[in-house]
Length: 236
Length: 74
Image (spheres, each protein chain N blue to C red):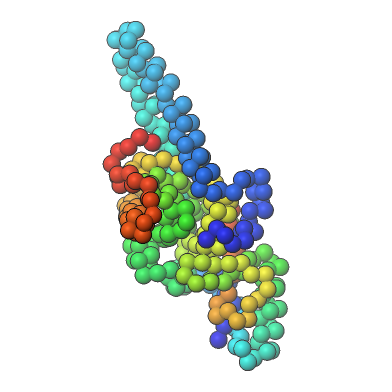
């Protein structure tokens, strides 16, 4: 999927390195390290205050609250990439949905009808495509990368917006990830609880597809990386 | 019957149609195709399951050619 010619849109972000698997994983680790760097001082200060003077525990609680809120706000930013944009007329959306349905398989059509979001398996993992962004569930993991990416035409119906992203993704996945702007990277469970119900169902479908793919690779003699718990809390 | 369609505010619009026998329709389709590319659209054909590719010349043998706008990071 990434062996074909780069997307023409890459020329607009020529300074960016191609977003291959190694770079995506490295950016994910950097994101986690940055989040930890934001959170640790609050936790440390809270512990220090409590050790020096137990009566300062209300201040410590406020600091812990800050430490909790920072990754939650990041996750909310990630969830926003899948928000629905109610643009265009119902007739236009029906027409666009017909074209999009023709481009995908039966299982993807089911998820699309249920959630309004499209799940697409690719080389880097499983993507969830929405009208204004995309979420990548990295291959063999339950880590997600949320991207803001879309088409700058305010009149397009939502399904046409998704079709734009789908065609670009299928033409060159690395280029697609290069053009898109990273909004969040972290554990799927952290993103999941910030998503609306339809987004959660789409994420569950993507995680299930990723697990099934890992099992297939295992049967075929591949060595898939172990899957994390689907939605159980795990370190970011 | 082959079709050149453009994704737009109506869902999609058929820009041109042609058959392998109708050379006049083919020429009209090629002209329309170039006009669309000049106005900023990108042309794509699906190539098998789960794949697509950009084209700069109208592939007259294709069943469906889709015109889309460029994408960008938000």
